[in-house]
Length: 136
Ligand code: 6JR
Image (cartoon, rainbow, N blue to C red; front, top):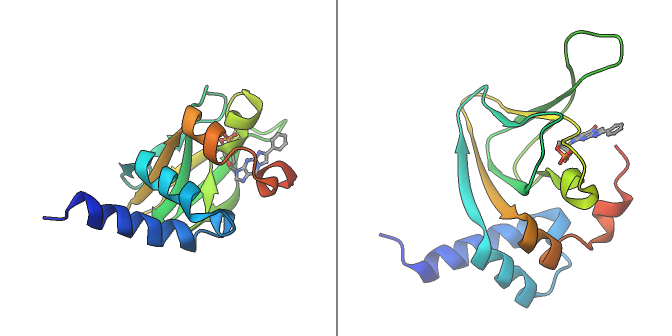
């Protein structure tokens, strides 16, 4: 069995490896480590649906996802990119209070994400320049 302390250390080590978070002070990372949750998704499962409301931010811990988006005049969503361990998604709906801008779908064999809710995101992550300057 892992102790709470071991789990916290593991989370801290991973958070330090996430490019988005690498310049945050340890105290802030520790706060994120304390509030994050784990979420698991089966292959082909929709983690995020375009057009839905959203209150969660995701950091990919294991596996890969594909991002798809509706294009005007086309009936099927088109793949726009793939994301891997250490990448994040779901920030746009939290920054703008808008609907989700794309679908995010788990690729085989499935995905493990760290999730941060809207309150913690706003307090600890939401003011990072990288998020605001992101230009897809
Ligand atoms: N675009 C998440 C990854 C893209 C991408 C282009 C866009 C928007 P969310 O998909 O956050 O949920 O994290 O909206 O909370 O190329 N993602 N690649 N979003 N939006 C989103 C991102 C992630 C879905 C993308 C994304 C656009 C283009 C034109 C408005 C207008």
